[in-house]
Image (cartoon, rainbow, N blue to C red; front, top):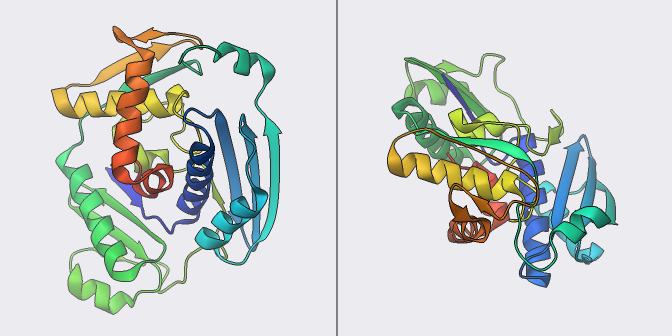
Length: 260
């Protein structure tokens, strides 16, 4: 059983805003320290950024408007905690405590991810999809339900009827759709709105990629300040995650679909 949402779901809009702000920090600094939280809905967008590099507020506002449209923006920027900043001086160390796992994707998860992308390419608006064995549930906004039934005759289509979706229908928050982004690899750490020093980003990416490569689950833990994890320098794990996210087009693009 697996649930997938697309990049216009309100929670993914929040993730994308957070990711784009992290991209902005990386334009200023090769290794910034930043954590961004976004809450959006019903014409309002609240953003808190804890960052080691000062961001241009006009550019932040432009990011929010580009992704979310015309919303009332409440942006708060504060420096990173002094103890966390000291821990990261001089070398790349693990920036958080946590447990992480990677799990190979199932055929069901790959199939639903493909369906979600097909529907998003066609309609380009808010959608949520579930595959439970042979049962497919499709909730696609701004789409005619009868047309969807012709494409997917055996699916449950828009159980509440045709709907518009988006942030005027529901609120969105960063990292609220980790099941969609990570499938069975979900643990406590959120993927989005954080720099690469954060294990929530780099170790989650590393574990996921290793599980797909080996075909076996992997579980790792870390403490803040660790310099070696899974027998590798943490700096190597950071570079693996950096290359993966760079190949996708950056943190905003990473936030669109996550790891799946």
